[in-house]
Amino acid sequence: MLKGEQKETPNRHPAEPFTYGDYLRVPELTSLQTPLQDPPAHDEMLFIIVQQVQELWFKQVLYELRDIVTLLSSGMLLEAVRLQTRVNKIMMLLGDEADILGAMPPQSFHEFRHVLTSSSGLESEQFRELELASGLKEPTFLKLIDKFMDVEALQARWPVTLHDAFCRALESVDPDPVAALVTLYAEPATHPELFALAEALSEYEVAFSQWRFHHVKVVERTIGDRSPGTAGSSGAGYLGKTLGYRFFPELW
Image 1 (cartoon, rainbow, N blue to C red):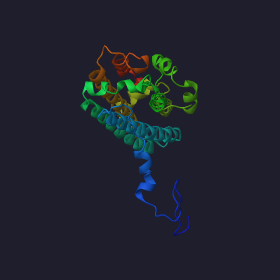
Image 2 (image 1 turned 45 degrees about the vertical axis):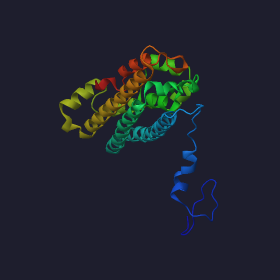
Image 3 (image 1 turned 180 degrees about the horizontal axis):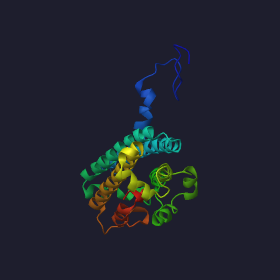
Image 4 (image 1 turned 90 degrees about the horizontal axis):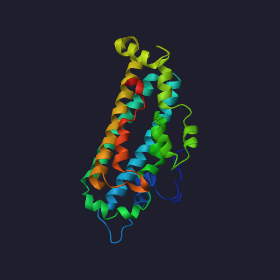
């Protein structure tokens, strides 16, 4: 682009100055919160914003994981660890954001819960892709998401998952990933980059589980453990079972 030229953005005349709001599409972004309850329910706006922000972070994590898998496949372990550390911070932030919904009293959620009709967080394609991309192969998980989305299409987007890439990286130590990890943790100085990767993925697993825990507790608080979830799920009952899911069982 030549000096003095300005890249055009959607809905903007070339002669207009390029602003912070143009770059971030702030007017469009802030127009996407549309509470449906009538009369208005104060906490519906909070619910929408927190869920939308989480979806944005899911998008960023998927973006990072794709590069991490590529880096691991190319043997660039240090750069993969750097990006994975960023992902871990995002996941910890997601847990804190879920806690914000805990500030919403149960009766406030029930003022607008009915407007969700049959929709459910189970339908979040980005979150389900994130679980699959990380390496989750739990049969219950696959069976559940098959009701809401095209599992084969999701799997096709991730021919190599984060778990797959990690196990392949461990093959330089031992073909058996568990044996490789035993060696790695017994003598971390012999394979410092792989050790750093294992630690980063352990932290990712923990951060993801913490997000699940925060989510479960918010659901328990707002709808209880006897009320069914939306879309016919068992609500807190199902979410509690997900706390046992593992992306990297070899690490544990």
